[in-house]
Image (cartoon, rainbow, N blue to C red; front, side, top):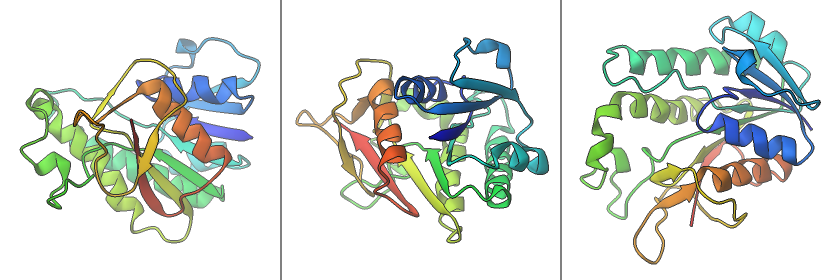
Length: 218
């Protein structure tokens, strides 16, 4: 497939890019710093300003699908980081609608997932305290889900990881859920970046979720 990947050099985007290329897809990497990408015959790096909706829509047009790993950062001392997230999400959504690309897959977060009590993970006392300084940026990622829920006119999916998303092994094995945080037999909620990328490209190749969120974990 011909895939446009926004944020291909990021924490998650770089793993998604590697998985897509390993499976033989043609990837257009839309990034701020094309020089940060290693050359690959199946990879076309393009520098773009995602806030320029017309430019971005033009770059996205003609692809089979778009994967959005946009993240302006998690600077703890940036008072505008939430607004930067939301502005970027809105620009990307506008460009996707204008581009006519039929499928949009968004890298999400665990923040909006629910606990058995019905409470959202981010707002619960189970949210890890070490991540508390990053809450404005995490709320920004959560906002993307709520923005997408207001978009019934194109085929989107929000792929939420488990609570702990970190580098690890690529096992190719994972479980899926919908609205609730997944935990394993030890009560831990986690997935490796590598297996998250596997789940994303699995959904790209064999779509099972439409205009909804789903989550992945062990």
